[in-house]
Length: 303
Ligand code: PMP
Image 1 (cartoon, rainbow, N blue to C red):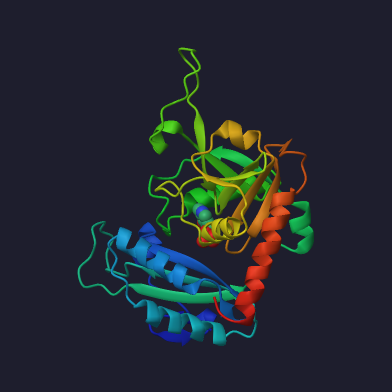
Image 2 (image 1 turned 30 degrees about the vertical axis):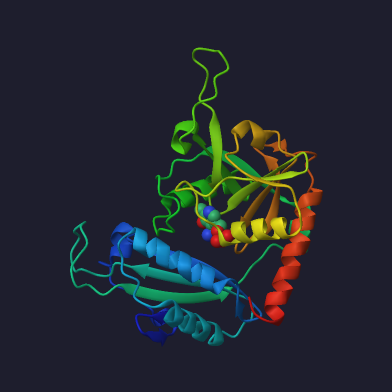
């Protein structure tokens, strides 16, 4: 069963208008919440991020945090599997015409769906994954979890065609408000900095220090990113949150992707070159063990 505009319906009966602004323009916001043993993980954080994204595009939140939480819990209860990936989706609705500015008095479209949660298997975690790199050609408000996912579609397809799981993205220094590095050469190529993965945040380990790019409008503020930083701080893992240059990524000892469904997953090859020694590193193993322990606590009790 899937929740659509006030009622639970069978998936095959869940239809929306061809003129919905989500269909026409990608004019909407989404969220993905992992659910372990029927307990939503960091629900409050996900619902607040949804609220922030809606506010950023001027779409009034159709529900309070409490109402959303109740709807999510009901959606979870209606599935016949325990580990779930709950998808929330709000669009600016169907105005009956294709006109760009916000329509007046149009009800938003609200959908909540749940599918089976697929996390990396222990074998996949132990082996790590491969990634390509790519220039970050998305817009400059990547902090908004927008339904416009065409860049992600193209990036993930390019990764897949290269036999890889993710695309690690870089942007020129100006986008970060940083000066290009000067090495004395008049026409030196501009320095690029890490933004994030196509559908994940990226962490780097160098000389025993965990490096994370600071939150900005150039990346999604990941719920997993926050948790990894919390866990690192609670366990005295040396941590630096600062812009990370492309050169640092390419000479990293470890590279990780993090997301609600991938959790903490090591990238062991970038553009066909091994990252560090090409194996899952010790800090990834440490963080993943701590992450799994945190998950167990949530499954036993609450977040
Ligand atoms: N960045 C992007 C572009 C993403 O799509 C995702 C996955 N939603 C993330 C980062 C990771 O966010 P989270 O940890 O909240 O899943």
